[in-house]
Amino acid sequence: MIEKHLLEQRIARLVDTLGEADIACAALVPGPSFYYLTGIQLHLMERPTVLFVGADGRLHGVIPELEKGRWQADMPLADTEYWQDSDGPEEAFARIAARINTKRMGVEGQRMRIFEGDILRRHFGEHAVIDAQTQISGIRLHKDAAEIACQKKAVAISEAALKSVSEKVQTGMSERRIQQMLQMAMLENGAEGFGFEAIVLAGGMSADPHGVASDERVLQPGDPLLFDFGGLYGGYSADITRTFFCEKVSQEHKDIYETVRLANAWGRDNARAGMTAHDLDAGVTQILRDSPFSHLIVHKTGHGLGLDIHEMPQIMAGCETELQPDMVITIEPGLYRPADIGVRIEDDVVIGDQGCRSLTSFDRALTLIGG
Image 1 (cartoon, one colour):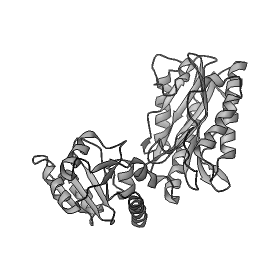
Image 2: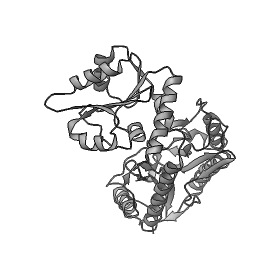
Image 3: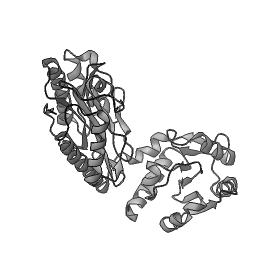
Image 4: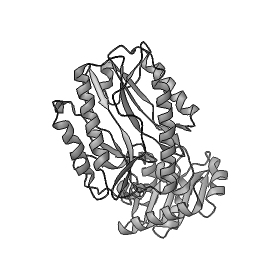
C-alpha cells in the first residue's frame, strides 16, 4: 500500500503541473497514473471509471457501484458519484460536471478511450477535453525511494529467475517451453506477475525485437537465444534483455555480440543528469554505427521505466528531455540480421548527478548454454 503522505505529494505535483499548463482539471481512467495518485488498482473495463483532479487539489470520482466499498475505504475525502449498471453512468457524470464546471480538462491521450472521451465532451463541452499526456504522465518521471526499492526488487527477482533457467536450458527445447520455465521461475522467486509477456526467441527469430515464442521453433547448436522479460513487484516491472548462444558461436556472431556489449557499456558509463536523451542515444548508437554492422540497427537506445514498461523519457534521437536524478531508464542497444541473429543487451539504470546506477547486474559477457 502506498503511504498517504506520498499520495498527497503526488497530487500536489499534478496540481502544480496543471497550473503551469493552464489546465483546470485532469481526468484519469484506471491505469498507471490513476494508481500512482490513489494507490488503487482498478481494471480498465466496459464501465466508465474516472478520477478527476482539480487545479484546486480537490478530488472527484465517477465510480461503478460494484467498486464502492474499496473506493470509500481508500478515498473517503473524494467527492464521488456512484452508478449502477441498470441506470448507466450519464447522470453521475452530469452531477459531477455541475460541480466541477470546467471548460479545459486534460486527459492522457495515450490511455483514455474514445467512449470515455465522448462522455466527457457531452457533459463538459465539445472542446473541453484536451490531450495532456505529457503533463500528466510527466509527474512520474522522478522516482521516489519507495518506487526505486520496488524496481530494485523486481530486478532481483527477474535476474534470479534468469540465472536458474539459463542453467537448465537444453538443446532441443522449444522457445515456448523455455518461456514457461522463465515465467514459473519468476513466480517462484516472488514476482507478483509479469510486466509483459516474456520474449524468448531462438535462432533467426531472435532478429524480431518483439517476436512471440513458439512451440515449433527449438534451440539448435549455434543459435542465439534472446530473453526479454520482467517480473512485477509492487506494481513495478523490471525490463531485462540478455542474449546467449547454444553450445557454440561463430566468429561473426561473436563480433556482433561484442559490438552490442560495448554500446551498452558506453551507455551505462556515460548516462548522467544534465545530458539529454538525444545525446545518450547518439553516444550509444555511434558505437554501433562505427562497427561493420551499422546496417543492422533498427531501434532507439531505450525508454523510461516505471509503472508503465515504456514511459517518458524516450531515449532516442530528437528527444531533448534532460535526464535528471532519480529518473529510471533502460539502456538496450541491439543489432538484428533477419533470419540469422538478433542481439540485445538491456539494463535498467537510475540516473544520478555524477553518472547512473545500474539496478541490473546479470553478467553481460558472452555465454554459452545448452548442451
